[in-house]
Length: 310
Image 1 (tube, rainbow, N blue to C red):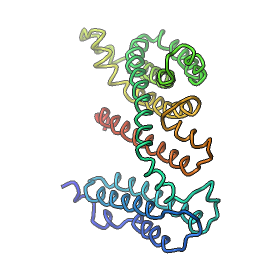
Image 2 (cartoon, rainbow, N blue to C red; image 1 turned 90 degrees about the vertical axis):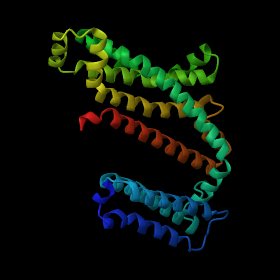
Image 3 (cartoon, one colour; image 1 turned 135 degrees about the vertical axis):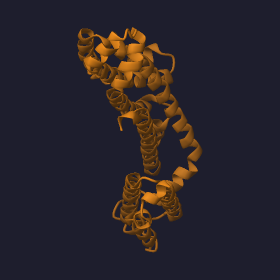
Image 4 (tube, rainbow, N blue to C red; image 1 turned 180 degrees about the vertical axis):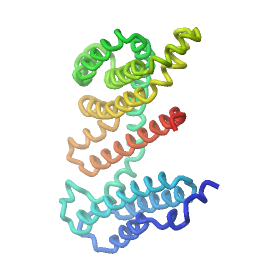
């Protein structure tokens, strides 16, 4: 079995478990912050520990296990320092930096609102991002097919892609019917130019010997583009798509903070107007988790589609 490749000591004896014990022990220190809810932080970290133990049991790759252990370990260290500086020693002012238990308790109470805002933000990102890829990748292949047009198009795409899509928001508000459609437009522009540039660059850098060999076999244009040039261009296509995905979340959050009435950016902006730093921090953490999960899934998809490279 794959799990037998990792020795039990290397699988189960990890520094992360000692960090977990340290976090649990500091909960015995008296609290100096008011309205602290340590139970929610304890539930969060116990859940993380059970998740890590499950991964330790079922994973068969030591490299993946070590990476996950490092991520969980850094999370434990961060929560430990956060708890010490706020709830236990009151070094940071509680009104601006509430303890982690208080933040998790507030996030749990706002769970339905947060989930609704996540759905709104993800819906906008998915719609704009997919539209951009559906247009950018075929267009990039056709432009990159010809060296002359591809080289010129790359410079044009770099010029247009260097313009922050947020500058188009006033025009979008004036021309489009809803703020959601404006947000989709911003995501589309943020994703389109990196994906187009990456696709054209990949198509232009395909070895000419491969193309000449295909031509000698009388391969037609469409099969040439989508069965030969597209697979060979995937590394650079994914680079552009990954860049567009990261920028999309940044711009969406900014757009929602400017004029949105829903979404994760609006959640943070709305409560920042009231000075509710507990909800602000909760919103920031949720945004980080959502972006990290989406990026992780995207990288998994990239690894699957490019498994032939290994």
